[in-house]
Length: 449
Image (cartoon, rainbow, N blue to C red; front, side, top):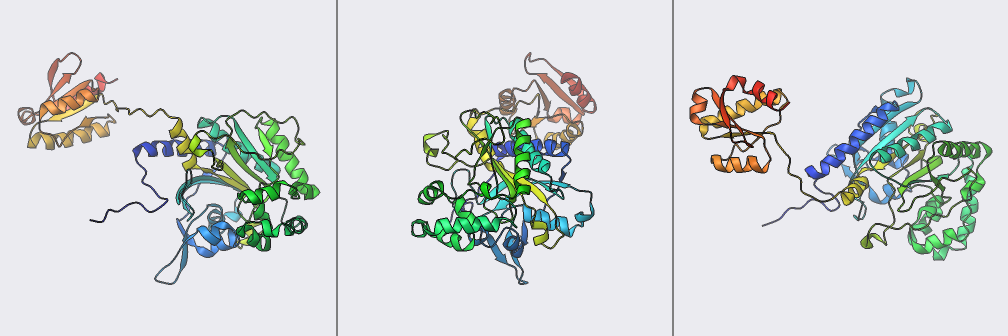
């Protein structure tokens, strides 16, 4: 017999998972609303061209990781691999360009990438994202980072560190790319196969390569983009760093951070949790810190690249690229699955029995029917009640009530049903009394106040 399993890299979410997902969503909603962000949900399926153009033809996401499909009508669609192009598409399609700026939106939901499944990475994964469209002010970059930082703090994360860089604007980045290619050409034969291709298509992506041999080349003398910023971009970045200091948010300058998407401009950032506290730099012009290896929490994770809990940046060209007016924007996303995994790892694995103060027991066909009707009255009165309608034995139901630590048991037998009455038993004292069914909800309310 064939045994079906969930597809590779995808998994079932059970109740113990959902409570963490719901908590993260609730915290995101509360904080996003406070800062004036409105909820948006985009379709899980989008046109393939939206990400090919928006995310970038040369990105790993578009070249290797998208789940593409063709409909019977010949439409080329994709399971959304990330959120920002979808948000920009909705911004343009729904006429949000005419709204007061900045337009602030947040979202929460599943995304899909065909990558190698490993710890913290799934082919169906969840993100919570923030997008602010319409302002080019450095204060927006700082606020986006602050909100993600506050969300993670509210979820119990400590020793957070923001790795941050500026990759300049698209207009002035060409000179840096020219110098980067000039440097890397001498090491072409030593680069991995992906980076040899990137050298032709998008040399900035090489800075993001995780291959050890490429990392060594990058660290040994690659030109740093921060040294090639124009005055406007430099001032923008300096103001962001000074704001982080004012907010007492620890950061580390990472000159090799570029993020894996083509649309980023100026500020890019990622937020990690370090195992040891990192102290706030004293000035925005602090020495550039090389991004070193971090300790991980278990032996089995020692060789894995640490995963960012959140990341994002500014994307001032994307709205225009997708057909709108020139519109500066900034945003980012939380890796919900990574956060859930860390929370679960730190939570003591003890199976908790959910306590119910009231248990409804029944004996016989008509009492079962009456019990269903009675439960509806309790639901409307917002009184939680446990039951075992499929069981016929009163003793087995009382055992379950005892296991659930129920304070009171309501007992419906054939006689009680015919007389429109019910037995209320105190499980601690064993005392019981008979009450009219029409009065039992009120009586339970008094007992459970």
